[in-house]
Image 1 (cartoon, helix red, strand yellow):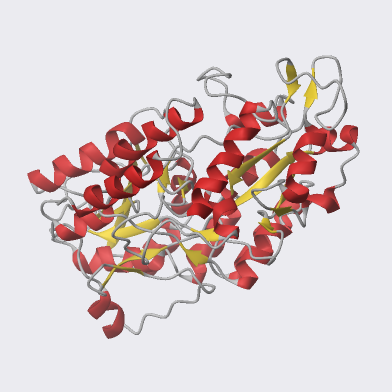
Image 2: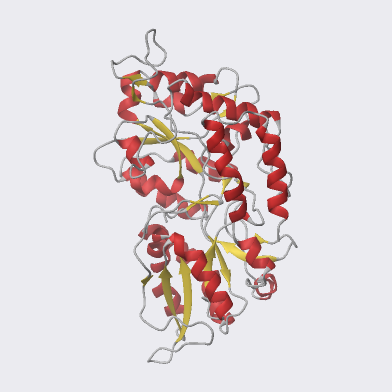
Length: 453
């Protein structure tokens, strides 16, 4: 897995489990190495985090010589199944990564240790930017730490922009509304090209034979539309929950939501974005952008390293759209969330490793090791921005997000069930199998699903 898409998971195939230090994986009781060090077992699914946190291990072990850290990574499809099985077996890792879809359930199951008292006792200070905070439960207690941050932006193929006569400066200030699309809609049309070279804003454009789409397929892949509708509806003032950070329902019946969905679907209907199933399952969204099939798309900050390192195509990144009338823009932040297992017999070591991941020393080492790691410490992030700039990519859009502060996303109880209950209907809507009346039904379904224990 690359990173969390805010609160949603983006699955990629990874090979088995990767351990950075060799020793027993048992956490039911403390495990010792041959030289007498106590093993801290830490699990995640993210190869970027393996690289980033792996760079912190030597510094941690130097500062805490009686401990050693074992990092294990598992396939996304297997990760949560395996984690749950190890909870039941009493053999879970001391520290583990979890997403907003799952951790509220783990808290309710008493699998996650409350760390608030330990943070207070040890004088823990959060040096991260506004909006990147420790993880609290619905009861207001602190259960975990956010160790980095991520957000989405509009990535674009620079060559395709130039050919269409669109400037990069235009993309830095895109406005949007559901009536005519604002300047965003104009740019999308200009960037769309049919097989005969006609652009979407020219007479004779053939919407049925498109060579390059101006924008990505916007059919949502998660209940809160983290990489699709959230920034558009959010610009109008809509949010993916009735309260934060733990909603009881998602207000899909709000007219601002239905208007947004209708507009985004029209992009596919009118030939400015692909239809569902147009590209094969093996064609990644990154490949769609770099191959010229799509000119712009919403992707996460975790893709900066991928695009900055592309030697064939120059890719830029712009901020998300803002409302044509008010200028409002919704920037939701996410991050890798780390927790201590309640059943750990090594809570002292687990706490030390958990908090070390947010320390200046670890954040600097992680950022240096992997530009895909976005530190929550502004000064450290500035070094990442410079690293990426040296490769020819300006990520000031993300720098500005960090300076202005991020809005917290929603965390849903029974998030996995919500994904299953909601997303298939979005697909049906995109294929015109259901109409706008379905949104009120989806809101009620979201309420029922979130309430399930």
